[in-house]
Length: 407
Image 1 (tube, rainbow, N blue to C red):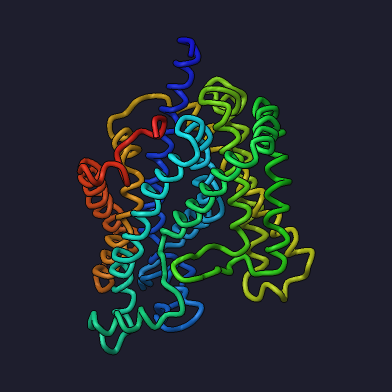
Image 2: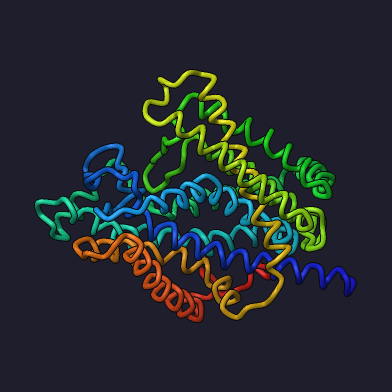
């Protein structure tokens, strides 16, 4: 690799690493404020009542701040699509370097093993306060009985990792057994990468095919639960589109095409900001017209609402990348550490969040104050814990501290 190409790749790697650091802070903030949304019901969701909405809102506090609803809505519509896109970026280079089976074994160890441990141990402990809120018998033994009586095993936020692991398996199958299809995909995306707005139109079309038919059949809020596997019924295929879009873009290499720090995406970051704001506004307006019984909404309104989800996701993915490539090229020690430990923080943060929200239920602090405490203390707990586990000989590989560019 020439010196110029190496420098461009390093700059893009640093920008994406900084984006990863920001994203883990957003994830912690998102979960920290869920208990204080203005649109929550007056009382907590019962632990034994289907469809078990306490999975999304484990604690419901009486103190509310409607500004949190706007932030959470913004993250809800596009954050997961961005996470799948970023996860796909480094799959193709890693497959080329390691080979199919070494890559797969690494993913099973790095994603599968921590996933099993966290879902088996950490997630039930995280939801114990949810059970205690309305339980007549708050003992841990009674909670275990109620947990085992559920028709599935709630995975908590780790549903993302189970879906991501499945997508990595599909990437291995594509690389190993369908090289022509892989090369056609990579070539088609490479031709679009120099023209981000054309790429946006292609993403919109592909995501619409993956999402809209399912959204018209099911409610956008429907989840599929099977044992410890859970995912948004209407969005799973759309997330697959964003993952493989990242896969194909990453195959071109860092610092090139869409990922060039001086490329058309980064240069036009302000245009992408406007597109993201319009996309979110489009989705928010249409969603407000479809609350309640989805099937009772006129077909044309449901169709436009489904298309608004696709628009908000696609623009919500491309704008943060554009902003990171344009403004995130400065090295900051704190961001380096956050980026390196983001995966471990994702695995470990949820239990502190829920227990802190539970502990603050009876305090007289306003919602903003409670949310700040939950976020701050969770950050202070999960960050050093992730770093400590990453430094252990047995912990380095599953959740190890590696920069995103060298992962």
